[in-house]
Length: 243
Image (cartoon, rainbow, N blue to C red; front, side, top):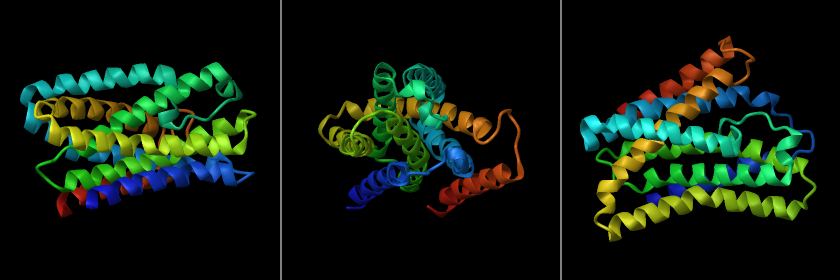
């Protein structure tokens, strides 16, 4: 039951994030910088204190290779998504049909991959809870940016809502497939640590990019960014010790 409730949280927060620009005619992304910095630092924190130790526990010294491959895979996905998983500011060129198609493909692949680790039975229960929180926080600004791009395209409102609901379902469906396969296919249990290592590498790339790019034109840190960063790292640290 907890598993399905957690997936419902991921779905609902993704839906809420995407509905903000759809329901607010005067929404501006400029105010998202603190949320981006917080989500990036929290995602980086749980990757370092939860995911990566879990991967090394399963794969030993070969875990680094999986993390590196995941980092490189994210570089490829970024070519498709144009950095939308980092919540880059949308441009009108991104709303063109061809570019919009590759963007949706890249983001959907990213969303599917980040759902796979949610179906794995971690030795420490707190890892799952931290992952759900980290992915949910990451989804909000990501989906806000995606819907901001769809608004630039002359399509009906109901199509935008359908696309939002479909995108919000990708990660929970991926987690369900992962959890089901884990119980029905014995060999999948040995494959999952490699998948999680790849996702950890992807998270490292995304979170570091968010931290350095959110709200600044250069790699500098303002007071609010330090506060958001410390809050994100602090919650990741607390989730590690409390769980």
